[in-house]
Every structure is written in C-alpha cells, then in structure tokens.
Amino acid sequence: MLYRLRRWAMAADLRDVMKNGLYSIHVTLLDGRVGKGSGVILFRDGKILGGDAYLYYTGSYTVKDNNTFKGEVLVQRHTSPRGNDNPLFGGPAPVGIGVSGTFTETRGEMTGTALVGKASQIFGATLHRLADVD
Image 1 (tube, rainbow, N blue to C red):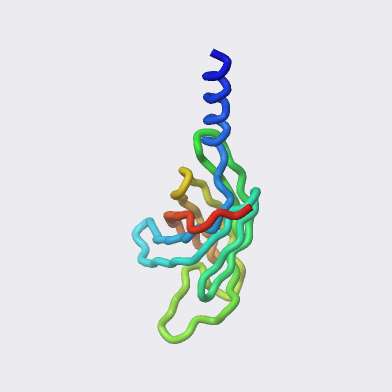
Image 2: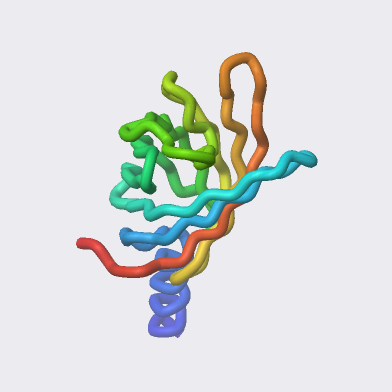
C-alpha cells in the first residue's frame, strides 16, 4: 500500500511540472485577424526567453495545478523588417503579453493577449519541445 501511495505521489509531482526545455512556438492570430509567426522559446525554472528573425521575448511563468501555466512576456524588436515582412507584435515599441496554457511532457498550447498600442491582439500558439535543458 505504501509503495502504491509513493508511486501516485511521484506521478502527481511529475504531472504538475513543465519540463525545462527549448520549444518551437507557432503563433496564429485569433478573433478574425490574419497573421502567423514562428520561433523558438526557452522555458526554464519560471523564466521565458526566445525569439525569431525580428523579435526577442523575455518573461516569466508559473505552473498551476492540472498541467496549466500562466505568464507574462515582453516582446521587443531586434531587427527591422525587410520588404513585405510584417512580424506579429513587431512594432518599434515593446509589447506586453499575458499568456496562459496547458502542457504535457512534450507539447503545449497557449493563448494570449498582446497590447499593441491601444489595440489588443488575441492569439493562440502551439509549443513542441525540441531539447531538454538543465
């Protein structure tokens, strides 16, 4: 009986921990707007770092019960767009984003609201773990 109780407790602990790792992120605008973006994002011990060809992301997250997380991210431009490229949330001013999502051992999904100027943009994103990080 004690053995089964320990196994259950260990499984419960694993269930509520988002694995530190490097993830691909694929973003799609919602609420009738058109736009997509992709990059990489690192989740490590409550910190978020990431980027793509034009933007970089910094922030933090906390893990909640039932394999969910919440976080805040600041998106800033590091390179001006060229030609017809139009990065999501990629104006000259930093953009604050609130996110929430769910995760498994290898994947995640999240939604968020970005405050771009005076307008808000709602988006959905998928995460796929690419590599473990200690």
